[in-house]
Image (cartoon, rainbow, N blue to C red):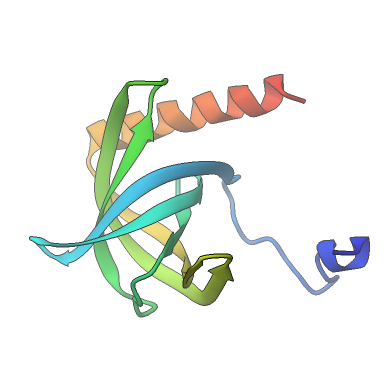
Length: 131
């Protein structure tokens, strides 16, 4: 990839109010309880997340979500809420074919919101200490 390809075009405007942080976290998604789809969160903020999945999900779909937050080598926590799929694009890498998605978090209980904000704070601190 050349530097020209990596640079956003002048017409690109970042509309996010909250910075996204790269992560690799499992996610459960469902529209109907008991019918759970899986995926992998690739970036997250306090307002939304990006994820990959082999499942085809339509844009504007509202889904229940559970993201498993890594808390060290052997400890996990999770957050739950509801999100809306904002965009979808086909995605392929060696040995894997599916979709990339952008999701806006529409609803989250206060205890999950608190966990999410603490996790984002940890990601911010990790990012600033590595620079």
